[in-house]
Length: 164
Image (tube, rainbow, N blue to C red; front, side, top):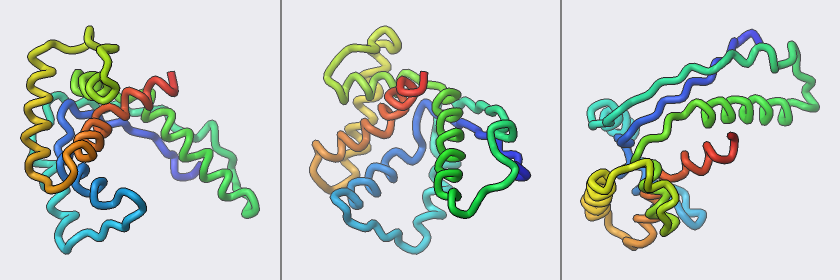
């Protein structure tokens, strides 16, 4: 409680590190351990700062002070920390703003038009064009790479649906 934890959700229309995340997830799939190269974290930070993001949304949640006990018994510490993490996740998922790219990725990934009313055909074309451009920069199985890339954008739709 003394930490006064306040969850913050930051949402981007365009994830500035989407290609870096896709590559890392691709290389670490099937239980393989991904080992970052020297300077890779710095490169990711700079990419995140410098790359276009489109619309950006910040949402500040409610302090967790009221839902946390004053002390934690050592024998229940793991349960306590899991509940804190769950409370943070719930607020972040609830406060995360979904953009057209999230809905486009969901529909592409699922092969449906469930959220077609939330984006324009031109936005979908722009998203697909960017995705293809980005995926050409990574060596690997294009179907798996596309599934990972779409997941980066589509997962917030599914996470948001789970908590609402």
